[in-house]
Image: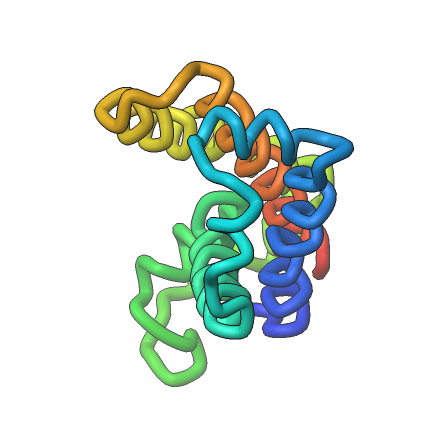
Length: 162
């Protein structure tokens, strides 16, 4: 089972595109800026090329790892430790992959697992950090919502793009 690099690249762009919409002043941008304690001047002070470049690299890592959350066959693939043709994989592995190779490989299934990851992995981390930073629940829900939507889209792409 090889990763689909095109799906991962497209999925890596998703958080940036969703972020442009989500944090737009007409959507949640003004509320987020107020809840985070930032001003427009402070936001204009960063090196956008570095910010977006690093964001793209990190999003690529996230999209690559998302495969392990949304594609069930990766568990079987991981059990053999490499490409089946390079190893002495058992006949049961090949039989399993033949029977279930495309099972649960849909956009809907990937989005579902992306939402689960957002709610049960990202939300607790964001909320914990924000509570210690003395941020409001509004801040927590804006940022968590962004990641839940982004992970749903990432999951849909990496799982459904077969």
